Length: 265
Image (cartoon, rainbow, N blue to C red; front, side, top):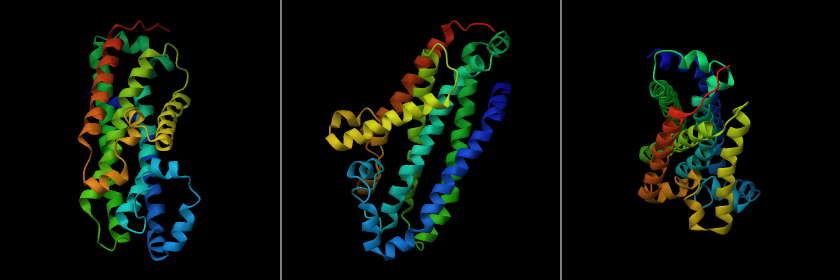
């Protein structure tokens, strides 16, 4: 419990910053919804400036942005991207932080097994992600309902909101595996941004080539807004892949971390 508490203390500031940024994104876009809904011509003119691949990657190529469900698809495309960066940052940091700040020998010399250390850190990450997603759901919901004049499909909204968490756990598992495979990691953010945008670029390429094989490679394809609206749910296939990636990558990370030779300072 002490490790969980300490880990949360070390990460709560970034939790606040990212959550505020994601909330601000939702609020700012929702402010303009009624103007866009009333002026379809202006909306179409604005959207014509975006390439088709970009619109598809953010889940608003095949939706009606003059309707609140389609507009939320557009908004959550950005929120998911921010959430992915945060999840990746947490995943890479969890097992590499002590090595980077040169406190690994202090922590691992304590009478605590490595798996206990890693599982405690993972628990702290889940506390951060759950807290963040509860706040996002609860605080964006009133703004979305007000923008829709009360005509909001709560199930669609809930599916959009929960997809942020599902994408985040994909990147947490991926980040953990990368952190135990990289021998020397000086900074988290450059690697975090590189990996997240690599997956996003794969999604852009996928939208250009329309190759189903590429769809399996990036979580940005798993929970597309247009698919959620049409099916009123997630595709079970992609949901299973997302959860499987997190579980498998996390278990592999713990196995490697357990036997990894960590140099003393």
